[in-house]
Image 1 (cartoon, rainbow, N blue to C red):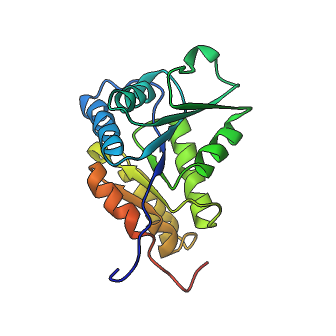
Image 2: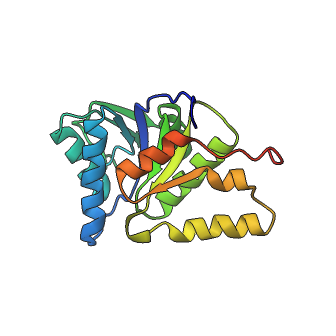
Length: 195
């Protein structure tokens, strides 16, 4: 909007797979996302794992001299904990891990992943809807249309009367980091008829 001041995004909570996808486009998207964060002086806040797509993301951030904060949990095997990050935080359980990541983030972004990624994404959306904490936006890097079914689900919820237009507008999407962060800076649409 014209005349609207946007705050700089500095800390980005990133949710993604702890398994490594065999799909080259997904691996390249993780590398490109890390490059974007490092080039724009943003701090990565992620699950702290040394496995799968999380490893690729952190490796690329550190290779580019970017900042990577890992938030790990005691309920996972310590063999997966990275020891070379800018900062590491260890939580008691997954619920605390999610809360710490969101507390430290300006925005939250999901890249392709599985159940943990979906859980974290919807938790971030619920927190954003309730305007809790300092979280200013939630988005997905929609590589190869991976998250299209999530948008269909949100639209089904809206059509059934459960979600408002504003609820659905909380989730931003981009096929590239540049496109996604433009969307995240724009904020949610307003729907004065619904909370």
